[in-house]
Length: 219
Image (cartoon, rainbow, N blue to C red; front, top):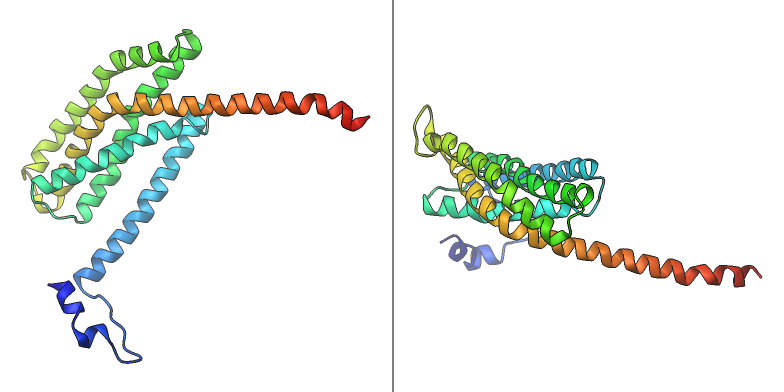
């Protein structure tokens, strides 16, 4: 309907000095999405810097941030299934979901790094051991969070119209991020680790190639 209205000749060819703008709900939603994008970007940057300080590595935090991508489809699928519109509470739920989904990946990746450094396990055995030992706390946290959000999602309590979308987003995102984290995060960790090792090999080759050339240049 809106597209057909914009294609009318009177709107498609506006006179000089006349511009088309959105007001009312459309303007409010545009401002909401702009502010949400800034908040999400700032949140992801803060999470990344904290992970860099935690792991003393600039590359492996990318593996943990992959959990954020896996939580978003579940959040929007939950909104679609429940016929809930995207609103400010649902956006707040997405920001809450970032921290919870990141926590699950931190538990997994931290144990993999610990097993390789302190217990001498190879990468494959460390990933298997991490998935086996960290699956229980990850699932328990998800169940506890989902159980706490369920009364809000079904509309119990005060003002369910505001809080229900937030709870629906958190529950849907947690379901997908929990199951996909145990499957996808180890794969992403493997690819990232392969990339790091390849770069280290190239750096060592470059250092060996530049080493003998230095005395000849000096002579």
